[in-house]
Image (cartoon, rainbow over all chains, first blue to last red; front, side):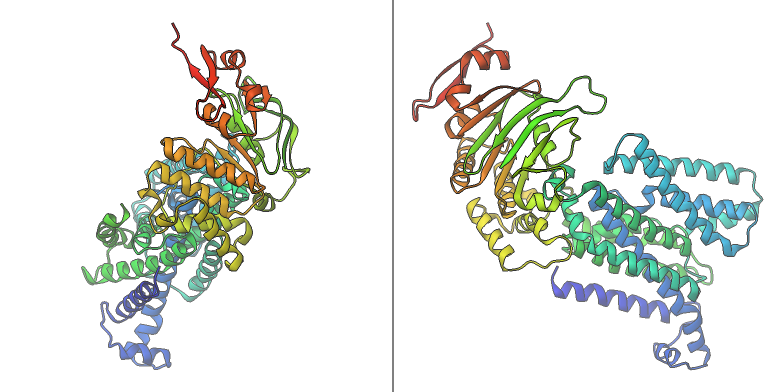
Amino acid sequence: MTASRWLLLVLSLVVAAILAIAIGTINVPISAIGDALRGDQSTPALVVRSLRIPRVILATLVGAGLGMSGAALQGTMRNPLAEPYLLGVSGGAAVGAVLATVVGLSFAFVPIAAFLGAIVAVIAAFFVARVAGSRGDARVLLMAGVVVGAFANAAIMVLLANAEPNVVRNALWWMMGSVADATWPQIEVLFGYVVVGGTALALLGRRVDVLALGEDAAAGLGLDVDRSIRDVFILSSLVAAATVAAAGLIGFVGLVVPHIARGFGARRHRTLIVASGIIGATLVVMADLLGRVLRPPAELPLGAVTALVGVPFFLAKLRHLR
Amino acid sequence: MIRFDDVVVRYPRASTDALNGVSLSASSGSLTAVVGPNGSGKSTLVRALIGRVRLTRGVVRVDDRDASTVDRAELARDVAVVTQREELAFPVSVNEYVQLGRFPHLGIWRAAGTNDRHAIEEAIEAAGVRELRDRPIDALSGGEWQRVRLARALAQGGRALVLDEPTTFLDVGHEMAVFELLSRVARNGLAVLLVSHQLNLVARFADRIVLIHRGVVAAEGSPDDVMRAEILERVYEWPLVVTRDPAVGAPALVPLRSR
């Protein structure tokens, strides 16, 4: 990828972030961003500092995490449809969150329950794949993830079938994803996962390049195939699970962002993973902004808007894929 | 250089051994060909070398070291392998693809240096793919793709080259070009182990032929030792005659009609 394209990607993210900070139910002048950073106590500065900036940072981290883990997984599984949610991450997280809601735990426990649910689901997928007799066959792991996800969906329906209406409503809202209630502690935790996990995934990018040739060819190039697949799986799942715990389910990002990045000319996976992080961040920030301004003062579910924004983007880039 | 000692491999849930005590060797400076019917165990040999199947018995040695205990990247710096099946899910350019041959030397940390660039240029030149280098892999013809895969293996810069049917899908001209390249590479000192179905070309170019049948070595030796009608008829279960290649006098197989 050329330097000018990198610049374009970074600039898009910066512009999206500034717009998302300035525009909302209350519009603030762009100068208020500077005021807020200097510790000004005016209303626009307070809105920017306590609401908009955390929200935009959370959206950035969520988008970056989903984009990077999607890019790493598609290459590792040699499958353009692969994404972190397919590994059972989303299903497991949803079961955790719904379970916490149904048994009436405080809302503060929902992210933790979601994270644990996601991890349990990924471990279950690994276990299913192992029982199926595969040590490191990416296709078997993918199928195991899909099966665990289906099981999780059934479990959610069973849990919600006889729940109170407001429990059902809360669970549904959680599943639609949101960065509206961003808090700094949440951001700090997610920052750790996305920066450490994302850096590790980008470092493993060269191994993913080799894995993308197929397992026998990768072994011929001296790669420990089983271990490399496992490493990418664990890292991607952890990053994705952390995003789900922070913001609920935001579909489509992990799937489509790597394709957009390839449309920009990113082909080697180190490049692709970093570019997908930037594009994913931009997409989620833009989607969150749109969700706020389309029908104010109501907000549209973020998980739906990411798809609404992502599909045209994807279609525009689709012709470059062939 | 590469030696299989009494190798036994049985795939999970299979009722017979894919390899049942195969011993053979490929030495430096020569072209060793492995031939045999479909399903005879040829590809399993290659997979045993790169550690993709578990050996029930026996050992694969590279320079007298047990390949299963050598660090995989170290092994790949010595032995380059072109496997039978390889399909890129996401196409890269020819240049980027050939660069992957340096992965065993670079790992995930090192940046490519002069040595690496030199090896890549030499490989691209040797495989004759210079004019293709900026093309995406998925825009190559079958013949171009096989040559590019060869270039990637040569860029690995090892002392041995193992190829599993590298001339599949190639027309006569490209097939000859690959065999000439392999024979040249062998004369330059590499150990070349070639799995192939092209008996007549193998008979012309190989220094030694190993014929595998149902997981065991059915015959081995010089082309004249192995290319004999009674041996080949029994192994391939088809009537045939062996004559002489009119151009160079190598043994040549002509299959007959079954009636």
